[in-house]
Every structure is written in structure tokens, then in C-alpha cells.
Image 1 (cartoon, one colour):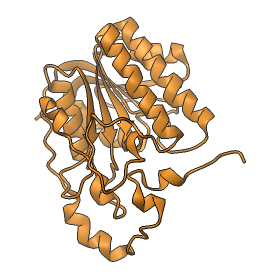
Image 2 (cartoon, helix red, strand yellow):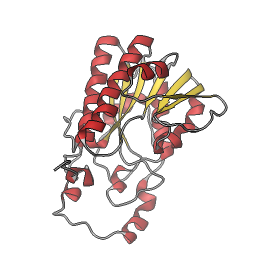
Image 3 (cartoon, helix red, strand yellow):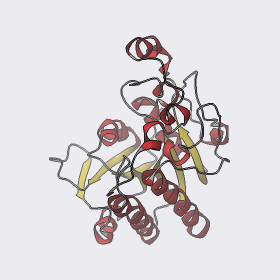
Length: 269
């Protein structure tokens, strides 16, 4: 159940896959939904505002944040690649966002972190929020930076943040790895809703996953937000097994939780 505890929410990365999936869903959480991305995305719908902003542009980010009550930050580069673009969008960009939040008195941010912050743990391990980061690439490093930065802004300025280590959020799991990491769009919205509604969010590291039987992540540190997944990858298991081959256990993409991200790069050689 959603309650409109916030008048105006900012959704960054609104033109991306998850942004599009959440656009209508998030209207249940606010009176006005402000959509921000680097690229044009058509006209604003009912109860929507559109603000174009390059995350690396501090002035543009400041304008996007001005006047909102909370932020759902999905913006930035969401795949592994060369460092420079990731630095601009994900490292400088998240700094610009938190500086704008500080200036404008925004006290709650939901930061789309990633399972790739911990991608170099093995698939045979179960980890929780107390395990240290082990990023599997530049993208994972940038999300680890965002988690640390958000911790600093909470400790110094009281800006509450949920770092959502999103697994694999698609309409359904695409492969065997995603049977462990899958997060349905509806469960993603339930997770965001729980983080927006909980009275005390603090600084929380939360794994974004549905109620999958197979999982590498223990979310017990996040019980205080009241998130309860309702979907599961289990219903797709037979179909995934039928269309995929048995894993090669010598492949690092099978050994480690980050999958193919652990093998990406180097770049520019």
C-alpha cells in the first residue's frame, strides 16, 4: 500500500529502463512526480514535471532538485565500461546530487546502487550488508563510491539514504544467474515505497531482490524498512533451465556473483 507522504518526488534516470517501469508506479507515492534525464522524453503527463539535466552539470542538477521532498536516484551509467564516462555520470553526478540535496534541504534519497558493488564474492557465498564491498569493475566502484558518499552526507548533514543494491530488474529472469538476483518491477516499487514510508530510514544498505528461493544475499539488516517481496523467480525456473545450457564451473562469470561483469575490460588497449 502506498501513501502520498511526499508532495513532490524527483526521479532521475527517468528515460532508462527502470525509470520507465517506475514512472506510473511512483505516482502512487506523491502528488507531483518530477522526471529528470539527460535526453528529451516528450511531454509531461498529468501530475508530472520534466527537467532535463546532465548529472555532471552541477547547475542543472541543482535546478532539478530544487523544491522536491525526496529523490529516487536511478540516473547515471548502468553498465560496465571505460572509466571516464562512468566517472562523469556516476561519481561526479552523485556528488552533484547530494550537494544539491544539502543546499535545498532534501532529507531522503533512494540511491540506486548495484549488486556489482559486491560482484567479486563467489556464488557459493551468502553475504549481508556488513560484508565489505568487492566491486567487479569501474561501474561497481562508482556505486561503492556513491554508498560511501551517501554515508558521509548522512553522518554530517542528516540526509537519510537507502542504498538499494539492485540485482537484475527485468520483466523476467534472462538466465540462470538471474534466478538468484531477479527483482520484479512491482517488487522494486514495493521496495522504494517501503523506503519512502518508513519513519526512520537512517543510512541503510539493502539488497534489491524478489522472494527467490536461491539467493546470495541476506537482507535481515533491512527489516526496519518493512519491505516484503511478493514475486519470485521460482515460477520461471523450468523455462530458464530449458533454454540454457549447464554452467561451465571454470568460467569466472559462473564462479562470481557479478557474472560477466567480472570479465569486462580492460579498455583502450
